Length: 83
Image 1 (cartoon, rainbow, N blue to C red):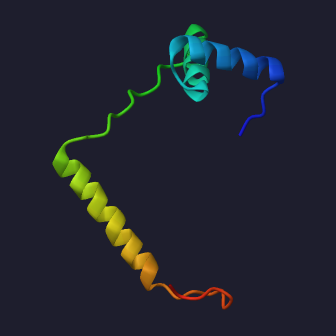
Image 2: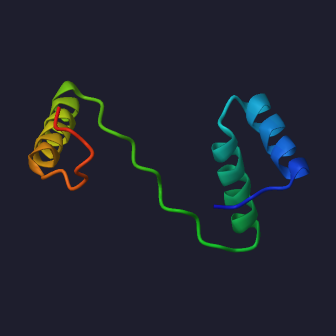
Image 3: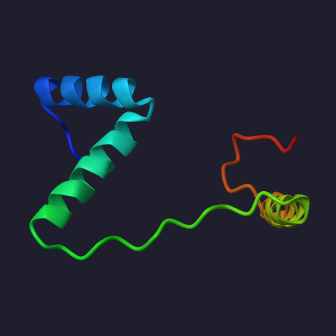
């Protein structure tokens, strides 16, 4: 985590607002541009999430299976009651 000065954060917010993106995305784009300018290799392309109904159903099933496994685990804090 990086703490920004008030001036840096304000500028990042202004740029993000002007471009219609998040502050994090604005900072990432600026860093990528700077890195490219000084000869860093380009970052790998970002993977897009599959939004097909099948992929969504598969992700949901994995999350539900994970949640079921967590629910089976013992509660180690005796002050918490099982729901």
